[in-house]
Length: 368
Ligand SMILES: Cc1ncc(COP(=O)(O)O)c(C=O)c1O
Image 1 (cartoon, protein in one colour):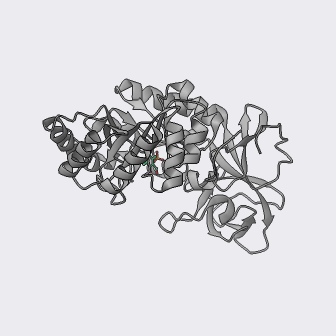
Image 2 (cartoon, rainbow, N blue to C red; image 1 turned 90 degrees about the horizontal axis):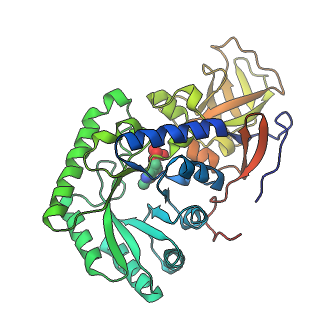
Image 3 (tube, helix red, strand yellow; image 1 turned 120 degrees about the horizontal axis):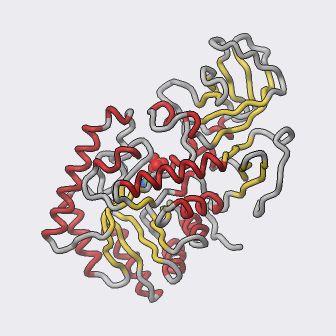
């Protein structure tokens, strides 16, 4: 699917992810305004949407550049901006060759956390006659990737400064371990802020001041200004939001811009209704035993079970009486993984519904 065509909402085949473009624009404006109010740039992570249409809306709303996780996403988004952050360590000759091709055209920065990634990357860029920016990633509590403290940040930043082919540009952190309600986040944010503060002091002392300090997530979105020294946030899921955003109180139902349109296919089992959106449409992302999603129009109805093509709704606590063939909209627990399960989405803009390609989906090279 490479171009958009109009679809009839009453006959569009389900299950399919549906995006509300008016809400997307409103979300983009709200996040950009929050960032501007606090002197932060917004460089949204586009892994959530993987779409040129949505990336364009983010940039029009004031995003200063885009963050990507894969080279495919970088290649696609280089059509929209020449300010890209590839927030993933790049290893291996084909990746480095694709990275070099991008670096010849756009300002691309790569986040990494070891000399074992940095040195081959720098050598490959020297070989290709290009330069790539480097952000040193620091683990601030998630325990996924990232060097373990200020001394290690300084050492890697120094190595990047000494090497040809790369430029040390700054520091990256992802506070993915903070997933409570905003009112319960202050201790977590303050711990992150202390760590970033110490890192910035150590870099300053070493004469290696970063021009970029990149942080942010959707759960901590509205508290990003509480982290000392950030220059930008990469909050990404906030373009659509999902059940997690609702549960945390980071979004209201009127902000949720993505749902999976599904059809009721069975009501035979008492207390249950089954829809055609299973784990291959919603993604089987657990939320502490609380099911896999909720109905947008009957939020008391939870998707309590998933087979690949069956979504099982618990209808015991609702007045809603589903009938076979009825269409429902499901808000998944985690939007990014559900989006990625679609071949294409349907974007609704007022009363017009069109197919929307997911250009950044997959890993192969992007070409028109
Ligand atoms: C490195 C990095 N930056 C930014 C984000 C965006 O986070 P969120 O979707 O919570 O806004 C993610 C999400 O996984 C990430 O891994």
